[in-house]
Length: 594
Ligand code: ADP
Image (cartoon, rainbow, N blue to C red; front, side):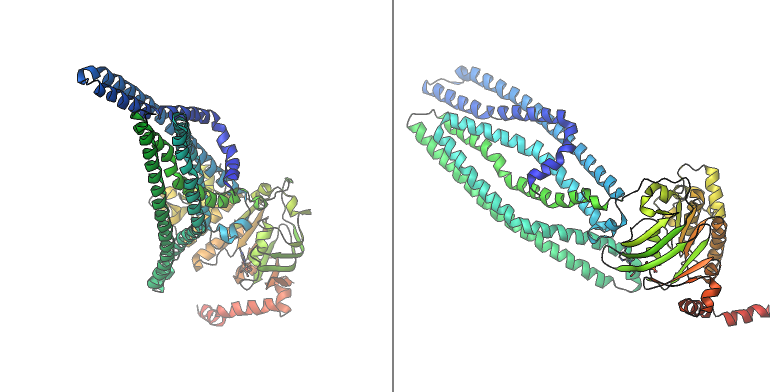
């Protein structure tokens, strides 16, 4: 992206603040004119004092001059302060407003994106956050630079240059001649840092996602006593980052030295030329001061050029990644328009194949028929593709080939919110938001009354446990045990009350008592609904009306428990292994003793 493209992209965000911008620009112009007052006043003062000295006048005769210039400088300073304040305030106002608009736009965009977007390597939690934060930060800095730094400084510089030219063509010529050299050096400097900046960006992202990973894995790290190993890994990343940072600084310092050298040469040339003109009686002695101060006005913004270049490069580096997030149109979930009165849950999959965006092939020519009002179990070893199948049924991903219909209509005809409002999901581990238990359960139905909330918690065998907590329903939900968090997910389901339910190993991580209670809750909720359950629990499989057995992304068998058991295939193998793992013979022996 070029800087102009970035400005074009920013236009819609800046446009609402047109009035403030015009006002800021007006102040800028005014500021550029007042900035030239000092050189004028100093030239006038030096020349007047020189004339007085020539006439051998003293302080009494010079009093009027002193009062005059004091008033001029005093008034100019007041006007200037007001201008600078107005300029900064409006510039900052534009910056803050645009910054929050950009951040909000990024959030509302990513909420629209499909799961494929989130599973992309570039969009992992830490990376996506850095891309958004850095993007907004550097774009707003660009705006700030433009309105608060560049424009005022350059307006100042151009006016000063014009005054220099009008004073003397050659003096103006020297000031002007320095500029291209300066630009060229800054340009070289920026070019040299371009590749390094990208590297710096990548290393920063790696560092922050590395840190997030470390915090998330702290229990595993400690239990395997891998603190040293992890510390070493972080150290490595840190060292690489440090090296790049040092290189950036080294390059900057070297170029800055060259630039200030060039600037000083400019000053020397201007002094030599002006002194020559003064001695040649072409100018008054005040011109020396006048020209040096004006040249200072010309070169001040140019001294800032590398910083502005730096920040523009930042904007170039980070805005690309940021606008990529806003522009990921192909990641926007495509929703159909069909809003059915009620969804029954008759899913038919014919010859469905699917691969994840990273290329992992997860489903091959799958034929599945899920019947409404019945419970369908998906059985298979882990990695067989069971969760993937559910992902397709919820419309998280579209199939790559084959057909997928719900109640006789292609799934992608359905309005996604309408579809998902009719589906409830309980997973092996359910997400608990930061907040109270009540807020977390209410996620199932935002408008639920307290009574409905309590009723749902009761059905999920959670109410009594909540009453024992210190703050009851206001307790922080993230502090709850795994089993209790699972019950929150089930309570949400009761509140949502959907006709179709997907359960992905809902009791896998629970103890026996919790498993039994949650099974009871689920049995209650299953009544009259379409249920798809992934489970390794024999009792839950036995309760289902039909069973699909998956193996390596394919349907290996399907039927009822009795028919599958008799056919002595994969199902029988899994079933027998599960039964053996329960040590049934001993158990039955123990039970019969009682
Ligand atoms: P199961 O639920 O039967 O244990 P999954 O459906 O979770 O199996 O996984 C099927 C295959 O798809 C596995 O090889 C798994 O690694 C892969 N997979 C699952 N989720 C993703 C994802 N988000 N991106 C890429 N591959 C995935």
